[in-house]
Structure formats: structure tokens, C-alpha cells
Length: 219
Length: 279
Image (cartoon, rainbow over all chains, first blue to last red):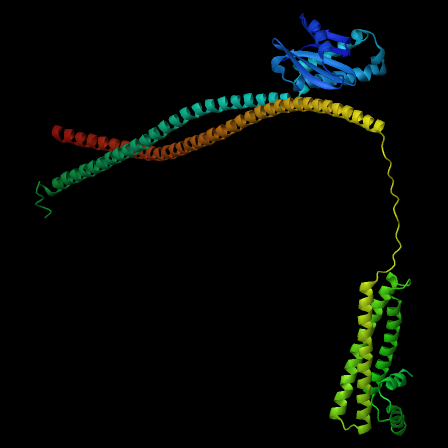
């Protein structure tokens, strides 16, 4: 979307014009100036190939611009309104008696600045600015969703690992309980063996003292 | 007095008796009777005034002010009649219940007849007033408006027709101009609406994204809770396993002591056996 050509005229006398590309816009614009019907204020748009010529005439001063077809009407006519106000504010009554291209040297720079502003700057139109901001918000949200999805994947891995760890720790607990039981039983058996050995030794001693295996003297 | 005149008009043999009654017993008359007499007198005076006003209807003196005065006088008389009628009824009741003298009763009856005659006079005056009010109209000062009529010439009519033709042409041009302006403004408005609808769609998309984000974050919150519970369970199981291992370590140390003791005992027994065999 961009404005390619702009022109300010009084009737059919061109006072200032600017073209950002080498086209035949100037010729077509002059033809349009001659063919605009009536003498009063008007807003009209003429289509030519892929471009549209927007014309605004107020108080005898005509402002014209050529823009892309997809630029619509709102921004080009805002541009025309702005140029009209700047021109009237700058030159005042001299407009009615000026010669052709009298203001072209000075006003070309203003036309160039405003063409650049209305073509590229989103602030030129509130709706375009909000649309741009909403696009930025949407991009940020898409990025956020990507980050959340990535985090989700890692959380899935983490929950799997923690589940495995939980299973392993349950088995570890079971095995340590079994090991504890095993060691306890071994300790029990050793204790019984010790008691048995001591009993045997005492029996042998007593047998010697009583002079026989059946303990005849002591009975 | 008006009473004497009225009485003279109605009955002729009364004055001597009336005067004699007053001279003989003046204190026997009660307050209601005196009030009735005063009321009748006032009504008679008012009716005379009313008659004078009624006689003015239909004359150059008949104005809106006169009509208003008539209305006020009529209302005043009605009020007086009401009051006097109440007093007369009161006096009649006193005569019936009290021990009034014959002369007083005759006087009260006379007052009643006077009252009726005054009422008849008033009704006659009212009827006359109504008739005259309908017949005559009060005098009202009017302003006669000046009417101006100037006949137009053929030249003027021709000029007017030309002006009308020019006016129609001018109006038609204005209508065409306004139609163009309306078309232009409608195009601008539709373009703005299109832009606003696009912004609305983008906002709706962003809204959907926020909702999806909320769902995902909530879901991941549940996953994090699961991770937390897994870790807690692992910690508890590991703690219990550590306790079991500590117990096993203690038992194993006891086993080592018992094993050493058993080996020592076997050694001693073996030594004794060898010594006995050698000896």
C-alpha cells in the first residue's frame, strides 16, 4: 500500500506536484483535472489499471493523488485533507493569483514527507496502527504457546522419570526389608548354635566329674 | 324599613300587631329569631343589589367585570340563604319543644313567610339574569386587523415562474451533490467497518490463543503436581529403606561377634582334646 503521486492545482493550473516513480501519472492527472464535472466541492476516485486517482476539491483548490488499488479510500483521502490544510495554511490568498508550478520548489518536500508518512507509518491511521499492534500481540502469543509446548514436553519427560524413580524406591524399600529379615534370622541361628555348643561343653564337663556318660555318681 | 315595605306588600293587617307585640314583651324574643330577622334583612339587601346588576345586562354597562360581580353576588346570596335557613329551623325546633308564647309563635311564622317571599324574589331575579345572560353578549374591545391585498401583475407571475425554474435546477444540483457526498461517505464508512472487523477477528484469535494457553498451563500444573507427588513418595520410600538398612547393619555386627565367639570356643575344645590324647 503506498501513494505514488500527488498534485495540488487551482482549476486546471497545477501549482505543485510530486511523483515517487516514473509513470505517466502526471499526464493522466491533468486529463482528470480537465474532466472533473461541476464547480463545487467534491470527492471522487478514478480507476486506471492497477492504480486509483483520488481527487478532493474544496474552496476552488484541487488536491489529487494516485495510490495502489489496495490502499482503499480512507488513507488517501486523509492524505488529501492533510495536504489541503497544509497548502492553505502555508500560502493563504496567494493561491488565487499564483502562476503554474509557483509553489512546486517549496511544497515538493512537504508532499514527499507526507507521501512517505501516509504510505509507511502505521500511526497515519488508527485502525492500521491497532491492526499492527494486534499482529504483534498475536506473534507474542504464538511464541508463548511454543514455549509452553516445549515446557510441556520436558515436564512429560520429568514426570516419567519421577514415576520410574518412585517405582525403584519402592523396590529398594522392599529389598532392604527382605535383607533385614535375612540378617536377623542368621543372627538368630548363630545365637541358638552358641547356646547348643555351651550346653554340650557343660555336659561333657559334668560327665567327667560324675565318672560316666550316664552320670551314675551324681544321680 | 324593608320589613315594613315587604310586609305591606304581602299582608295588610299586620303592623299594629307586630309593633304591639314588640312593645309588650321585648325580652321574650330568642336569639335564633333575631338572627333570622337579621339574615332576612341582609338577603333582601343583597337581592336588591342583584336586581340592579341584572338590570344592567344588555346595556352599554354590560362588561365582563359586571358578569363577575353578578357571579359573586349570586354566591353571596346563596351563602346567606343557607345560614338563615339553618337559623330558622333552629327557631322552629325551639318553638316546638319549648314553652313559647302564642305571640312568639306567630312572630316566627311571620319570619318564615318573609323568608319565603325573599327567596321567591331571589329566584325571579336569577331567572331574569339567566335569560338576559343568554340573550346579550358582553361588550369586548376588539382590534380589527388590517388586511393587505396587492394584486400581482402578469410580469411578476412570469418572473416568479422563472425564479421557480431556477430554484428547481439549483435544488436538483444540490441533490446530486449530496448524493455524491453520501456515496463517498458510505465508501469511507464501509472501508472503516472492514478494518474494524479485521481488528475484531484478530482480537478473537488472540482470545482463543489466551484460552489455549490457559488450558495448557493448567494441564502442565497437573503434571507438575504428579511430579511432586512422585518425588514425595520416592523420598518416603527411601527413608524407610534407609531405616531397614540401618537395622540390618546392627544385626550384622552382632552376627560377627557371635561367629568369633563360636570359633574361639571350638579352638579351646580342640586344644583340650589334644592335650588329653597326648597325656
